[in-house]
Structure formats: C-alpha cells, structure tokens
Length: 164
Length: 65
Image (cartoon, rainbow over all chains, first blue to last red):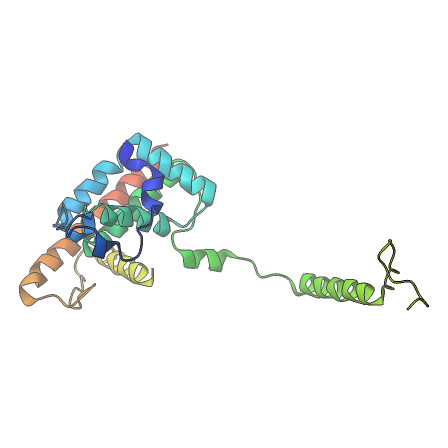
C-alpha cells in the first residue's frame, strides 16, 4: 500500500529539473505503462476495489467535503505523475473514476457534490438584513475609534506640556 | 472541469438513448487522425458501457439494503 501515500501526490518538482536530470529519468518523460484506454480503465477499477483505497477516499471526502470530480482528477493526475498513463487517457476514464468514487461515497452515506459548480449552486445567498447590520456595526465601531480622545503621553521619555 | 462536465453529459445522453444516439463526430480531446477515429469511438462506447454498468450495480446495491 506504499503507492497510496498522500505525500507522493503533493511533492513538487523544482522548475527546470528536466534540464539537470538525465533524459527520460522522470516517469512522464517515458512512454506510459498503459497506452490503451481499456488497460487504464482496468487498472483503476482494480485499484478502486481495494478496501484500503476505498476507505482512504471516503475519509478524504468526509473530512474535506471536496467535490467528487476533484478527488477523481487528483487520483488521475497521480497516475500521470507516476507515468502509468497519459493525461488524455486519464481524462477519458475520469467519468468511470467519478462513478466509482460516487458509489463508495453513497454506500458510506457521504453526501458530497459531484462538481465544484454544484457548490456554488447549493450556497445560500446572504440575506440583505445581515449585510446591512454588519455594515452598520462596522461604521459605528469606526466612528467610535475616530471619536476616541488620544491618550496623553506618559513615561520617562515622553514630552511634557509646556516644556521645550 | 467544464470539459469533464460536458463529457459526462455526452455519456449521459448516450446511456439515455441506449447507445443509439452516440455522437462521436467531434473529437473529444484533440483532432485525431482518421485511422484513430475507430479507436476513439470504441473507447467511448467502452466507457459508456462501464459507466452504465457501475450505475446499475450501485442502484442494485442501494436498493438491496
């Protein structure tokens, strides 16, 4: 299960690294392991059938409430990063990945949106009264600060009135 | 992400029309060569069938609870 370590997916490469490393030393510079879409599909279906992977994905969705498509895209991009398939093949199999993740989420009663655009649709607009009250409060507190009298200087080094 | 949404809509249409109205006249990702067109159509139908299969299996599992 070492392949599922989340750190692997967020490790960044230094810009210009392809100029300093030997050619074809990085996974995405070599031909992908799976070229055909059917092979990529099979690989992901097999991966998504492991209980540990399902558990990790469901926990991720529960904790972050991220849309399914974002989770699927992240999984797919890790595959590209590891040189398992091309990004084109990855995009083609994304609907299957989304459906697999959706199934796992629904079986665990996790309710998350499918696309990021669903988040915006489900968001309730803020009531105008709340905005009005917030603005009133902000202005009154600003006025109170402006009307405050400055505190006279105190301490050994402070200038005293009438002394030059 | 809009590309994926449109792509899934296309798959939904194909499932709704039971594969009769599969429009793969326009290439999904990039203009492919003519000889690759058949492969692209085959891949699209494969994905449509797999998505359909997963949805049916999910409904069965949820209804069987």
